[in-house]
Length: 97
Image 1 (cartoon, one colour):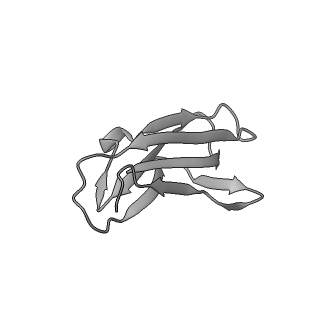
Image 2 (spheres, one colour; image 1 turned 90 degrees about the vertical axis):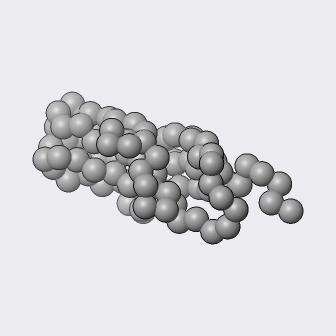
């Protein structure tokens, strides 16, 4: 499966690192450090959170994908634009037929 995110992030505290990841069936794809980390320099920053990740080794059948983000000492908000929630897209990389 290929998963991708096209979002922006805003935060409540400058200088703090924010981690972004995808959870598949209860397991973080990027482990403890996530797939990507961003750090804003001031509160007016908005940073693009865009990634594509191939998730391999999944058995045939249904799977649950969740876009996740975390911070240790502040609040992070993930947006797709115009104040709407962040977006994630999942595409099967096999024929599936």
